[in-house]
Amino acid sequence: MKRNLLDSLLVWKEAPQRKPLLVDGARQVGKSYLLKRLLGETYDRVHYVDFLESPKAHRAFEQSLSPREVMASLEVFLGSAIDPVSELVILDEIGECPQAVKSLKFIAEQHPDWHVAASGSTIGLLESFPVGKVSGHKLRPMNFAEFLDVVGSPVEVDRFDSFDRSMSTHEKLWSHFLDYLFVGGMPEAVYAWSQFESKGEQARSRVRSIQNDIIEGYQRDFGKYSGAVNAMHINTVFENVAESLGKPIEGGAKRYRFSNVIPKRSGYRDFERIIDWLERTQLVSKNYLVEEPHMPLASQKRASRFKLFYLDVGLLLAALGTTEQLVTLDELYKGPIVENFIQNELLSYGLRHTFGWNKGKAKVEFLLQGESSVVPLEVKAGRSRRAKSLKSYSDQYEPLMQLKLTKSAGGSEPVDGLWTIPVYYSRQGFDLAAKV
Image (cartoon, rainbow, N blue to C red; front, side):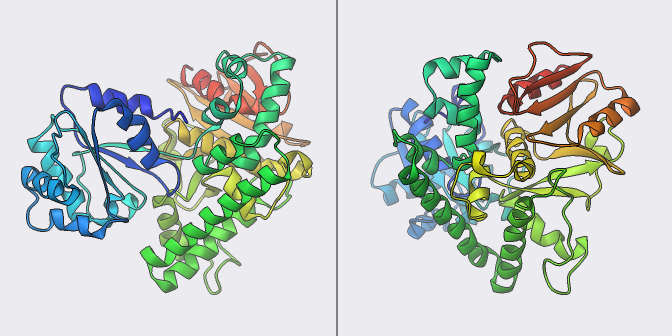
């Protein structure tokens, strides 16, 4: 299955000199597949070490961090000669071996001609990190474009890439979009879905089983990496994020509230470390709410004012216990779910977190920062009375462009600076905003 991040990794490979590659991402998002299969197949030989699966591999880094001595020790462990100048060396789940993490610094300084790639799901939890000594990338669940590349026909992929807004194309893409909300972007779930010709009960059951196993795996990790007491609180907040997004409240996702989640804890400071842990492991993400949308947006954020979103929309619906595609659910239920979809799409384009506007009763779900202007992006997934919010924003700030993502095919051209496009074209909307 194609992953868009591969293009950046191939640039890394072809550079005359390079720092060690480090791919960070939550468990089960496809890091090993990306490095071993997609990047690895461009090399004649690949040498693979998994520190989680093979604890004995740690010994290669215990005596010395000299790159040549480390490589010699890895040759003994793997039982084969290694030429890192022409062959790829993969250090998977490197967060399990802090000494291996430290070794990346010396490889970067002494051997910029080596091809060493590392990955991990606990990178964000490391106490020390070779800042400036790695080529870092984040891998997130497959976005809609990657999903469509697996399940769609070549014609559908081509129409999507060309930003086609004809009704015939919309009907096909909307159907795939509803499937994506159910399946999400975890590669194992996407692959399983693609293997069923009929997307009926058997396919849905298989996908849900995979998703539930992934969620349970995350919950087991809470205790392993955070301790028993912290694990209980982390799990409570993790489950609460899903529950909050699953409430059928008109107006979409709400600012995260800290009360009535953990007994005797009700303020941001009580939750700061818990949420930070979940964010560092990429299981949740923030959408900061600002009152004045001035550039740069990062300067306007307040630490305690944000919405929280789940790492994957398919896992979110699995956590909520849904068994049907979203098309069968109540319209009001769609708002937060589709917002979660947009949040994850934007993060997959390289954003670290997102911003939204909330002033009084008016709100715009997302703000995008262009070259010289802030672009409001309203998500209108179903029946809603929120049209006044975007107008209120426009009256106050007179943006050069506005975006509205809807369930309709939308218009072919903008009207008074307002682009109305289908919600699955968030990438195209993002690209339009970036030029303003």
